[in-house]
Length: 411
Image (cartoon, rainbow, N blue to C red; front, side):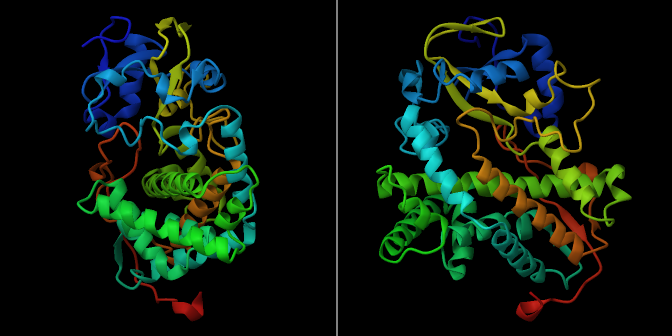
């Protein structure tokens, strides 16, 4: 298969994205350079931007590299049942595909609503839900941390911040996880989420509260309920899955890497270091679609045609040898990674802070409650989801000495 400019293209699929993505990105960079011709499902051509500097250029120039998917020159080749349409859709009404001044207004509305979340309130909710989830397995001596914990916690907290009653949280978690994993109930899950969001919007119109949705409805930029609902759905999905993977990937690192073993139970510093290293070396969001060239241009020595799709290779850019120091991992407080994107379409800072608090609290609570936590299987047997887009564990079985349930009184 060939690329947009006639070069041999690399299929953006296959088991190596699951088993050895870092090595795969190194080979792609060696063979093709910093901008790689790739093929999406159905042999649809695109470019994967691997270079740190090139990715900085693409994300920092929204006039040349637009978020407007209507520019795509491949729409005639995309079938109606194309599996990536939910990710790369046409005329989608959410903030993901809004451009220009309207996007800036929309981003400001979301950012202001999230900035209104009190830090102490966020931590309190995260600790409460984390303790509740740990209570469900702490007296058993074993658990599967991804399915029993990481994939349940972020959305419980987000739903509370949005203004949902706590009793609706478990149903929302089930619905979203069904959608994310493409389960049999995916359509029913989507319907449940949309219906729940519509009801909550109507309730907050009638009786506003101290919550994210009420603050979005107070914005005077003239957004419709439909636009706000679409953004809430995007925020919910984008805040849940990557944060769950951040928790899982960080716990895996702490339980399998000897550098963290000595300090695993020695305080919070090791948790922060593990979380930071994961964003550099094992980031939950590996690749993102995308940007579209507004005109013919050159990037990384490649001729990019007007309307070509560029995919953002966040994981590969984080490991670009052009910006690494002797190939070593960045640790400590260095947060120049691309894990939250860059430019005006990056993850809002307030959303990033919410995700970080939820992930850090989730890790700290499980380590505090289960102080001798250890892997229940060999580290080499752990597997990842087979996806080039999001990187997370399929399971993380652990064992520990059973501990008492805290219950409502202990929380």
